[in-house]
Image 1 (tube, rainbow, N blue to C red):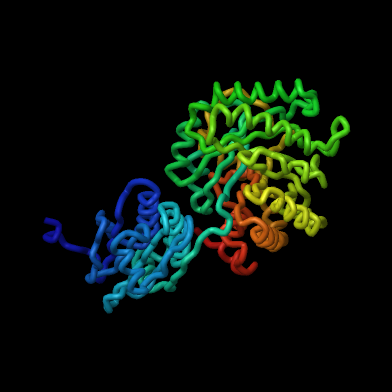
Image 2: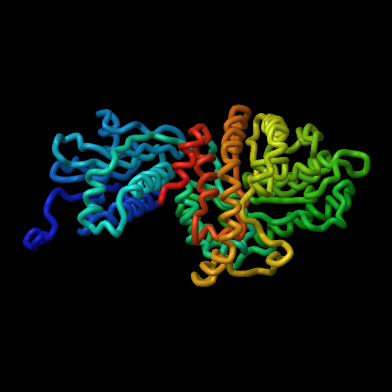
Length: 477
């Protein structure tokens, strides 16, 4: 029936072949639909099939994993590169192999997450071609005659993302959508009380390939507690177990993040190192919690300011507990990106920490971006609804903080090569890494700042040249 209607736009047309609209591959298909459709004056036809033959009558976009029959044939015939490694992808735009004027666009993932990240990469490369002021005729020309590309990539750092107090996330869906653009896969949300809508937030994040770690304190902020005292440690452990049982056990989270009494400068307590007492507390908490809830991921936030050179006292730590390091010196731990004076000492210390527990990963919270204004904005809170502020309120808040962001971005333009070198060095010591960036009240849901894009590009591949990292972070996508 459709063929009897007049086609108003002549010439070769684009079609897209996808295997599914479900899961992360379905998300990838939606992303490519948006990326391609913006160039076209007609509705993009999409075919849903496990095995689609090459369309020799026009341009073709293909999205799926490397095991899809069509993509496998393109790999075997050396048309596209084979994606390798977890979350890896291959993207291609070039001449179609059937010898016509047709173009072929391919996003192939080594797994479902790789397919999604590949769609972000392809969309980002396409975004460099043309703009709406050109009109559809010129934009159509751009996608059909723009710069060809072929690349296969995988992340250098396996867990990458954001660390934030929950109430400083103002639109959870937009926040998570922009995390996907940055190829982030981890979100640590810290709260005094569990948000009422946390299950919806977690489910949306999971649909976008992002794991959610939920944080709550086990003594943090209560300086009257003394972790060198057995009764205080027991009280903390009882509280942790009670909070988890009542508030978190039933949630579909991907792990729990604890933070305790280490955010100070006292290296010793009661004649022993703070590190030794922290280790004892963490082991007691792990025995209580993981004994009852085996298999959950338990992350333990620890501040280097109270540990210093006593990190060796953490070696007896339960291997089921992952340490997450904060405040270990200069960039990339520093609250301000211009704090680079102690960079070499920070690097040397971090390499020792990364090798402290060879069978565990090295996890850290990077800093240097927007943070809470503790004297004005911070307040401990009861239960609340996370991420449902109005668009107007979000926009106005970003406008109010724009001058701060300009300074932050400026400092990172100078310091990001040091951060990239830091991650390269650490990966040589321990290739298993988790890095989350403290970006609080940064309005990520409204705008991805250049310095945050630089952070994301650096985590994905710190081995790129400084020039290429900057160029990629500056892409209009």
